[in-house]
Amino acid sequence: MGLNQHSTATRRPLSPPSSSPRPPSSSSSYSSTTASLPFCRIILLSPVLLITFFLLFSSGRNTTIFSPAGLPCSFTPAFKTPHNWTGDLRFAQFAWNKLCFGQTRERLRLAVFSKKWPVGSAPGGMERHAHTLYSALARAGHTVHVYTVAAIGKSGSRRVDHIVDGELHLHLASNDAGMLDVSTAWKLFVAENRSQPFHFVHTESVALPHWRARLVPNLAATWHGIAYEGLHSELFQDLLRGPREPRSDRDDGRLRDALPKLLDEVRFFSGYRHHIAISDSAGQVLVNVYQLPKENVHIILNGVDHDSFHHDPEAGARFRLEFGVPHDAGLVMGVAGRLVKDKGHPLLYEAFSAIKERHPHVYLLIAGAGPWEKRYRELEPNVKVLGAMDPSRLAEFYNALDVFVNPTLRPQGLDLTLMEAMHCGKPLLATNFPSIAGTVVLNDGFGYTFAPNVKSLTEAMESAIRDGPEELARKGEGCKQYAMAMFTSRKMASAYERFFLCMKDVKYCQYPLDIDHC
Image 1 (cartoon, rainbow, N blue to C red):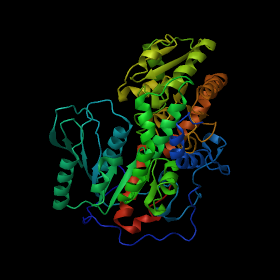
Image 2 (image 1 turned 60 degrees about the vertical axis):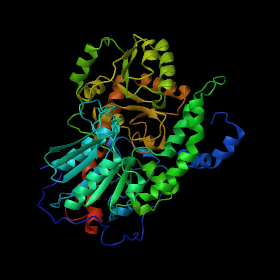
Image 3 (image 1 turned 45 degrees about the horizontal axis):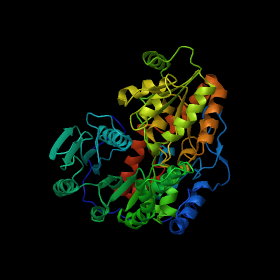
């Protein structure tokens, strides 16, 4: 019966857990080339750049913590997890996905604010995360009310709909621009909460603004991207400019606004009581930079539906045939997502331009649409631009590859495409941000990492080509096993379920309980 088997439990109004958390007596603690800018801007940015440099590039001792398929896994984790960890989950300074939570008969009544819901569209990562998580919780017997708007919302489509699917209730409240009407959603939430109080409220990023969040005692926000990461992205994108390439007024404004935006965010984040980070490094930033209490910062990694994404070589072979990949292709790489600058496509375009000249039997499949689509078509026939792909076909796409490439310039980390490719048994070639290297590409047994520049990406691609399909398949097997252990929708949903239970009743904050076992 889904995650758990349940019986009806008493509902009670929103309120903090019955007792305040106390730090365990011994718990692990958080570890702790710019473009030419005008002098005044360098002075303004210098404090945050120092913090950025320290957190982004500092390293600690190498520790072996996971070894799928017998692979050595020495790397620098953000947090260390004892094999037989016990304690208060509120102070767990590692991803809850690493633990095994048993079934409980408790039922929850949850309210969720999400900016978009994937209805009849090719959804983005946040929408897919929301759909996967809350559908799983509803199937498990929890009542979930989601205040959102359909991802296909258009201008002039102001409307309010209530869609019920079992225990999942969608309250679609859009404004004239087709975006979430927060005021209307809040009124619907207040009315529903007055009728039958919710146990807990969850917001996906700032879907529920901080001035509203302050009014809710039992609330957590999951952060899919923060201004600190956005600052990094602006810096890396600016570094891609040629020495004589002028900075546009728009880019100049974004750089100028990045630090004030970060400062504002640091100040208002305290309006959200609990914070869920989707990578270990993001958890570090929330504590060390945003200065949030450690007991209010929790790490739960994203997960994907293994039933939809799994290793299927025959589906991959059919996909190659359908899109004209030659039978004698030496190696097939692939990238998925929006074809925009901050996703690293200037890097990939330049790197693969060089690769195709040296290796004419190497191909690149691109599942996505955006401004860089036209440039990639210049590299045909070695590059095949497939356009935006329906989620139902993404698994076929991944299975057609020898290695999946993610050249992102945004260090937010847990991109769902990384996990989907791993589930399909594909090794990764990804930017070496801490969120990726510390949580996903743990070591070279899972693939290749590179610095966010063309030279480093080209070298990483050359390494994958030298290793060849057989070695890549071996790495892919390790990726698949690790993904099954960490990045399934069930792992994610059971971790969120335990978190909500812990917030409702402190007895569930203890680990392990009698029901917990791997």
